[in-house]
Amino acid sequence: MSAGRGRAPATPPPPLRGWRDVSAHILAVWFGCGHMPVAPGLTGTLGAIPLYLLLRPHGPIAVAAAAVIVTLVGIWASGRVERRLGIKDPQIVCIDEVAGVLVTWIAAPMTTRALVAGVVAFRIFDQFKPWPARAAERLGGGPGVMLDDVAAGLWGAAVILAGRALGWL
Image (cartoon, rainbow, N blue to C red):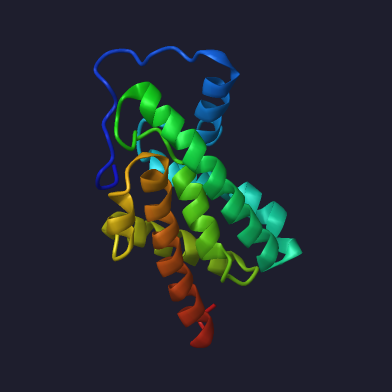
């Protein structure tokens, strides 16, 4: 569980009411990744790989556009799920990891090594939350859920760019 993540409630969650709750839930848990009992954040990160592989042949602009769209949709979806569950940054929400790792992969060349390096770098920064990630987390609501991971993704992108400059990626 990443720092600041809320634990699952002891009582059953409130039911999903209407298409907005259902849509927000499906997106926030990234199509079920967030329901993994162990390491839902890592599972969400890995769950972003199919989207990345679909977009990457179209260049870094396509990956960046997806990162922006996922972030904006994630702010809405995670905020709605957070309010429904009554938990700050619920552990099941992992659309934030998807957005964050996409930000990291904007800088990645189209290689397996870079894909894996992006996952590792992003997960490290997502766990340690260097500035401004920790500050973004304190925003609360959907922006707080999403923007700390976007900040971690920027740090991951910096590592990828350094790896490229050094000829490692």
